[in-house]
Image (tube, rainbow, N blue to C red; front, side, top):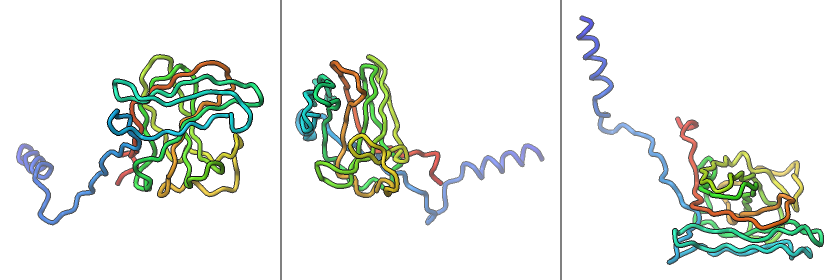
Length: 198
């Protein structure tokens, strides 16, 4: 009897789903920027020169089809930030939990910023991106970790990030430490936390 019961239980778990039953489909991964030599994303440099600073930065592609964000951060003339911006390939990320980045840095802490409009200035939503010197890391940033900021200040009484309308993605360094920096980016993609799925 025990053996028969075990066989019946095994059959229940191994039988195929009945015709017409619905299985929730997981969205495919979404790459948001490209570092491919043939079709790289267009990155725009925005440094503290807009407010009198002298920091420098650039985004380049490598032979391994990664992006290399490098430059020199300076605190002179009340400066202190360097950044590059791109338009993500997908702007409606409401079905996703956050961003996943594959990065190799220099031990400094960077920022990922998202904007819901294409204006040069205004509110941006910021999450910190830690790195370990010389090591590749996969970092997951849930959208709930992105805080609204304006010119370095955390804002209150501001609506949360509208994940259905993300039109600008920024990589930034503003850690108040002068000197050269280097952040290699293997990928930036939308990330789905499967633990929160039904």
